[in-house]
Image (cartoon, rainbow, N blue to C red; front, side, top):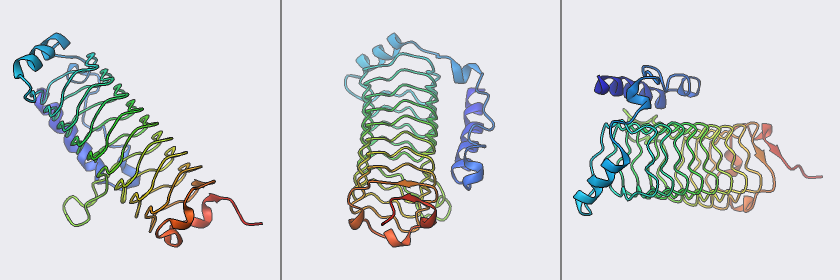
Length: 270
C-alpha cells in the first residue's frame, strides 16, 4: 500500500513539475493522502538509523521508500544515503550531512534542514514545500522539484543544476519551483535556473553572479540589492519584480531582452 501511495503521488508530482504555471502548485499533492501513516509517521527510530550507520562502516545506507516523518535525524552522517521516495515530512535534519544523497522523489514537507549539507545531492522530483533550508549548502545539487514557500535565506546554492533540460523532449519542461521561496542573502553564483519558477521569491541581497536565469519566471520577485553581474536574463519574466539597488546591473547579460521589463519596479532616471 505504501508503494502504491508513493507511486500515485510521484506521478502527480512529476506531472505538475512539467505543467504550466497555472497547474504547477495546484496538482503537486494530488493523489497523495497527506494524513495517512505513510506520510505522517515513522516506521523506524533514530536509534535504528544510527545502528544502520554504524553497521555500514562508512558505506551509504539504504532508506529508500521508508516512512521517516517526524523523526529527529539532526546531525547524522547520511552522506550518499539512498532516500529515494522516502517520506521525511516535518522531520528534523538540522546540520545533517546529506552530501551526494539520492533524494529523488522524496518528501520533505515542512522539514527542518537548516544548516544541512546537501552538496551534490540528487533531488529530481523532490517535494519540499515550506521546508526550512536556511544556511544549508546545496551547491552542485540538482533540485528539480517543488520548494514552494521554503526558507533558503543565507543558503549556498552555487553551481546548482536547476534549469530545465530543453534538449530532452520528454523531460524538457521539468523545472525547479522556487515560488515564494525566501532566498534572501543566498549564494546563487553560477546557478543554472533556466526556465525555473521564481515568481514572488525573496532574492534581496542574493548573489546571482553568473547565474543562468534565461526564461525564468521572476514575476513579482524582490531582487532589491542583489548582485547580478554576469547573470543571464534573456527572456526572463520580470513583470512586477523589484529591481532596486542592483549591483553589477551594467554587466548583466541579456538585460535588454527581459520580458515585461516595463512592468518591473526599477529606479527611474530623473
